[in-house]
Length: 298
Image (cartoon, rainbow, N blue to C red; front, side, top):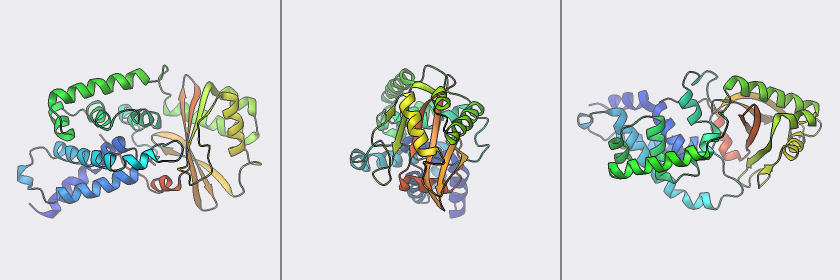
């Protein structure tokens, strides 16, 4: 077997492998590192011993992702302010037809997955999103098949208990509401903003202490609406700041540029026709991932 064949198999599955690792880590940059390390390990494997390349590589990258979680545990504990997943810049039409994949990379789901243990998160992702068998999952997380089933059940119950009462909005509705929110903020229409927000709407900002942002979530429609005007109203926002809408995590997201520098990514979560959550990523280290369009797959 040649190096080219190793590379060909890995490259073909890279969007899938990246998606698995990203959903376990919530970080595109760390996922790139995991895939690079995994490829080096893969390059030394005798392909004649590999019966199922997809399964083998999925298990390999999962193990490496869990190693990364453990290595970064202390850094996560010392993080300043709320921690949010890195936004993922996607092609406008990717993955428009795959509802399961789209929901699995949504900011709302990634934030929910943060409440699971690393093993629960890996097992849930491999089973519920990618449909791997329990023997494959057991090999990926280093547990018996019985234990893997128990972890999957526990994770599934946890996720289902915390899902929103209302079904998430589709992309078209989110796009309409995002446009209305920007129009109201641009015109200084405070009442119009409040009307778009759920009563307990929440603004959560991730700066890591490296940018100006609220260190605690801001809660309540009136409070969040006033907060939005301070950021997005043309007369109040910093000079040179411009905004545009892109596809991040398979939802319309507001991207703010100050001069030629990316200043922040703002995603909204819509349920029941109202905005329930704003996720603001301002940590410059996390904005690096938004400079390139990613491909995801399952």
